[in-house]
Length: 214
Image (cartoon, rainbow, N blue to C red; front, side):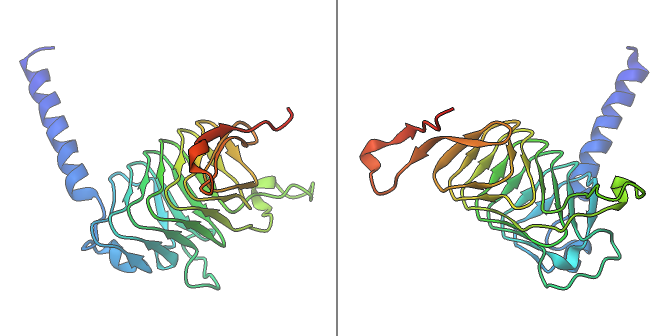
């Protein structure tokens, strides 16, 4: 690479770094004012893959949504919903790069929830029952999703409609959550199953393996 190429590369890097600094959405940004709530110190990093339904989204303080993320409430930007809040993300959360949070009815994420990259959380799915209608145009009824405070969702994990993840839960990388995961658990696999637990009533026991009979 010659001198011109090195200078061009340096300018490109500086330009992208500038875009990251000024392209993100913070509490004082015009787009933040459209949210139901946008907490102090929070940010949606640049670039954003998709963002709509802001009036139905609450972000707690000091929460960071990583770059290349999707955050949406409703089927489309024009969708008028019948409730004040469809997506609620608590304080001190970190949503990893390339993740998607897609809600049609209710996704509640507690305080201090962290995720790895490319995590997908949704309360909605497609139907397939009518063979004369493309599956992409059929919608199944949404089912609320909740994720308890202090939990961690590993890289590439998927949280599907109706899932209820408790507090202080680890979801292993690549796992698919379809049901209920109790507090103080480690769950892995497809579908995710609990492999370790902690009993706050018996702290001396520590974290113990769960034998599910498999």
